[in-house]
Image 1: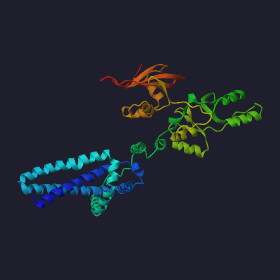
Image 2 (image 1 turned 180 degrees about the horizontal axis):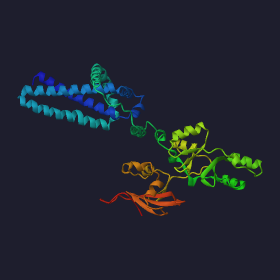
Image 3 (image 1 turned 90 degrees about the vertical axis):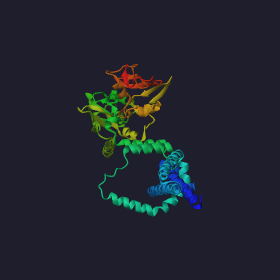
Image 4 (image 1 turned 45 degrees about the vertical axis):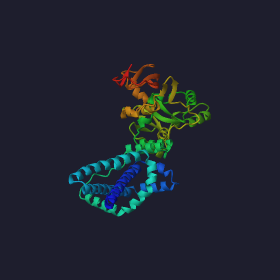
Length: 429
């Protein structure tokens, strides 16, 4: 074998190795968590990797150019070597073999390795990637100029920004990677969901509203407010569907003491503020802030009272539960032993699913944000009683506590894996 053939073989091997490198680097940099790299900024290799990620468009064009050049070079060198020794038909066979070699050694194998060791490969290849990015920068600029010129000849689709679902995925990835702690991740997710919620989603239902009848005598009103933990209470006339105002408790007690037990309740009332059930809570918060209101009455479609919403209710959708010294802490998910858990009816189905260790992918999207009590009610064709149950897939749900025909507590238990062919779905018992 002469020197020329040896050089051709060496050049073919180098071109195959470089093609494998470009494939390895591309997959690694597209897979690696930017947060993990940023967390190692004291490492010189990490700083180089961040520069590659910051200029990823240029780096990707360099990878594209380098990959194509190496593939063409490898195929040409293999064809030349074969044609020098064997007849012309062997060159065709060699081209097919070269294609398989490129696919396995320069594509499939490097990509598999890069996905498994994305962070290490990114750090190790950052310096070389910076070099090739600068080397191919002129060719990359020409490549993009031609691409823009060709794109300008046709009318394309409107540019699409990041969708809401993609934002949720990004937040989840950052939380899993450790670049965003769990509490901040939940706060950002809550902010994204905030604009979609309505007054009906967060209200205190009318059956749970502590309200005062304007016909009560002063002593009864005093005894009632002493047993409540709220600073303001709605006041109604005849029925709770006719709320006539809001009473500030401190004002009432002050007047009660000053008047020796004689109080004109109507004269102390602030005007009630009424909102529709489908009002978005971000708009409602702005309105209540502008009017310096703490409470709003949510009406149903017939002018009756559906419930009430406070500023605290709205803020809790952003920052989570707000507790004060008078609140009674109630756990929404309590282990009972034997694989059973007591779940509050106000807990969402999706949150309950996750706490029970079930896969969310097995849960329909429309159920994920539905309340457990509402979902449980839908499984029966009548008002359920305590100890009645239903199954949904592997989940056995039993009504544990009822209050005024409303489900308050449920007991959930995950059943063993069902036998093959066993039907899934909910059915009341």
